[in-house]
Length: 412
Ligand SMILES: [Zn+2]
Image (tube, rainbow, N blue to C red; front, side):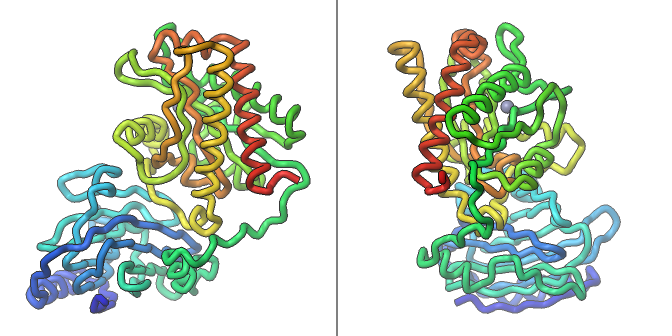
């Protein structure tokens, strides 16, 4: 079990003094554990950050630092005997100051992970200074609570007992509180729009146009096949931020969120269909797709919210596993249908992958991002522009959603 010293220090000098004392008193620990995952639960004036390790940490200390000049307020956690696991390092942007995990919500700006001796420093950058308190969940997880001074604890956040049970695999994810809708409620999100055209094809096909057309067909198929209540996040060529799209789905309490996109690659030889759900990137290509699809956030002048963290609602409502099942159903249905329609060698199954898509981070229901084809491949582009193929693809997506709803018991 780690030895935990929790403290809150406002003046910066106090932090420096604390760090020095801390650095001097810690023996070096061999066999460093890896930090595998960071889960951020955001509540009202209260953030709870769970750090999942693959082994017990060494000595741990926390401190709070007020904003000074252009440096934001921070809560700093120093953990001895721990390093950053490769999968976290690969999933996020590394700068000289450390590996950055953007959050950009609820007063939490980002988390910067950097080496510190034989340990790791976790700095949470905040809009306003918060009190930091540290606890443990089992012997391989640390739980950092950050609250605005004098604000009450947010009881909607998952508590340590629940997190322990979830980590042990003994707690099924709590069932979302909402009663099932009499008709499935589905939000379709045509990617990009307005000034953000998304990918542009060899024949100048704009992703924002082609995915709107495909999305309309998916909506029609879902209404026809499932008698679903379907809305689109945008009905025309307008720009919406990624968070506005997710907010529409959350406000409507949708059962399923489908973000429809077309892919792009640096070279024209890449083609095929792939479907994503939210998790740490499954490979380097997946990470690149997420970076491109998340790009609109940065161009929008908002904080970079690219990647990133699995927000509490996703974990609590257990949407990760459901999203993965939804992704498999949709991907399978589309690849199967296009294979039948187009014949051998004309469809390529790139599979179901995970990555950190902002638009999926913010949704609270099973959500996927469907990449219908590569606009940068001339044949793929031509297929996607063909109305008859769009219709078949839309029908297949609807069938995949229907299969998912039937399997998950959501379909009345
Ligand atoms: Zn896109």
